[in-house]
Length: 467
Image (cartoon, rainbow, N blue to C red; front, top):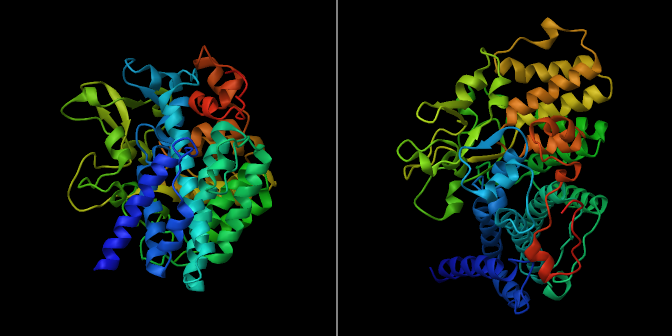
C-alpha cells in the first residue's frame, strides 16, 4: 500500500513539476529532477508508472488532446475542413484566416504543451540511464515507448513550425537558450528515435489495450515519416508490414465501429482515463458534436467545401457527418458521445490502419506501381461504398491517381490530427488550394509563428518568415 501511494504521489509531482518547469522549456528555478529520477526508479513498477503518466498527459496536453487547442482543431481551421461557427473569438479566427499573430495564446498552448511532453520523455530516459535497478526487459520497453512519444511530438512541431530546438535533456541551463535546429536535423532525430524504439519494443500490446506503443505503432509513424520525406520504397515497405498483421488490424466495414475503444482498425489510441476526472468522453466528441442545449458552447463546424466533396452513397457522409438544424451547420460525428460519465466506449484515435493503406497507395503510385496503388485505394473506397477505381477507371494515369488518393485522404481523415493541413504543406499545394478562398493568404502562412512569449524568454529563437 505504501509503495502504491508513493508511486501515485510521484506521478502527480512529476507532472506538476513538468508543467511548471517547462512551460517555456524550463524556468530558472527548475527542480532537481535527477535526484527525483534516482528515487523513482528503484524498481520496475515505479518506472512503468511514469510512462503511464506520460500517456495520460498526452490526453490532456493541448497539442495532442483533440480539444479546442489541439492540432486536430487548429490545423483543421488552418486548412479548408473546419470553420468557426461565429466570429467572437479572434484567437480562433486567426487560424481560420491564416493570420496567426505571434502572441496568439492557442498557438502558445500547442508549443508549450508539446515541449512539456518532450521534457517528460527526456526525464524518463535520464531516469532509466541513472537507475541500475530496472530489469533489461522493462528498460527496453520504456525506452522504446519514451523515444516514440518524443519522435511523435517532434513530428508535429517540425511540420507546424519548421525547424525547432531539439531538446534532448532536462538540463534547463542548456534548454533555456536553445537555438532552432533545421528541419533536416529534426527529422534525423525523429527517425533515429523511431528506429531505436522499433528495435526495443514488442509486437504485441503488453497491457491488452491499444493505448500502449508497440512495434507496429512505431512502424506506422515511421511509414508516414518516410512518406513525408519522399522515401517511397521505405514508406511502402513499412506500411506493408503493418497491413500484413491481419490478425491484429483490419479495415472495419461499419464506419461507426472505427473509433470505439480498441477497435481493430486502431493502431494507437489515447484513453479518456488520462483526463483524471469522472468524464469518460473523448475531447473530440466534446468539441465537434454541437451542444444540444446550449449551442453557444459549440464553436466549430465542417466547412461547406469538405461536406460538398462527399458523394451521396459515401458512408462517411451518413455516418461521420452530422447536421444541426437549429444552426443549419454540419459537424464532425466520428465520435458519437459528446459528454458522459458512464463506462468508456470510445478512445481518441491517433493512428489507424486506413492511413497505412493510403500511405502505401501514394508510395506505390509515386513509384509507378499504379495497379497496386489502385488496389490499396480501393480498400478505402470499398468501405465507403464508392465505385472502385479498378472497375470505373482501371487505366487511370499517375497524376489523376495521385489526385484521387489525396481526395480520399481528405475525406477519410477530416478532423483527425491536421492531416489535411499537413498534406497541403508537404505536397506544395497549400497556396494553390487556400489562396483563392483565403484573401489574406501568403505563402509564408504555411508555418505557424514561433510564440512571442518564447522568443522573449529565449532570444536565440528566430522567427519564421512573414511574422
